[in-house]
Amino acid sequence: MVEATLTARGLATRQRILDAATAEFAARGIAGARVDRIAASARTNKAQLYAYFGSKDALFDVVFDASMQHMLDVVPIAADDLADWAVRLYDEYLERPELIRLATWARLERRPEGHLAADSRRVDDEKLAAIAAAQASGVIVDDVDVFDVMALVIAMSMAWSPVSNVYAATPAESEHVHAARREFLRASVGRAIMR
Image (cartoon, rainbow, N blue to C red; front, side, top):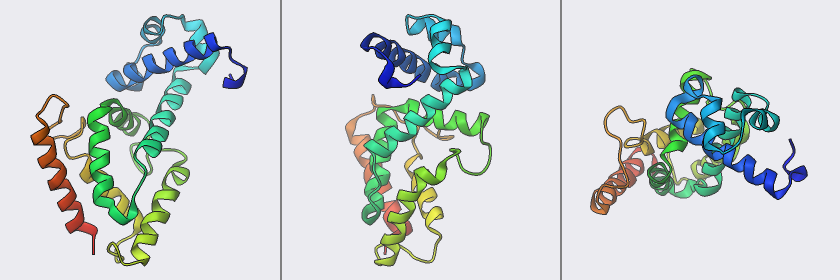
């Protein structure tokens, strides 16, 4: 359903469904998520959920696309300072751990290899162009493929994310601990790719 045709009440219901679905998918993945739990949490019914989104898979797609768009909007790339970009990604994973969990479920259940998103070119083109410009201006290493530079910086930013296989950071940790990690991340990215 097109948002422009929804009433204020319909938009509120749709948003409650998206919020509930985000939490459900982040916690349980696509296969483990249950439409009845999403509907109950959103204070609606399954018929309404299906009217808005069509299917559980389509609902996941909307949730996942929104999470990817959120990352693009809130943490835009700064190719002339990729170390700062990595730190801002770290902070966003700390603030919104469900975003990285959704991406991980998409990787595990939808796209075990290749690009994470079906339309990854749309998502990555801006980032890749910015990195290529930074390479051309001599700010970062230019003997590495732009995609690999982006992938490395993102991977480094996820070192303490909710999907780390070593340690998942939480906002409950002291700011001193987070500050030390940010500085270490900033320095590590700088050593890895900056000129």
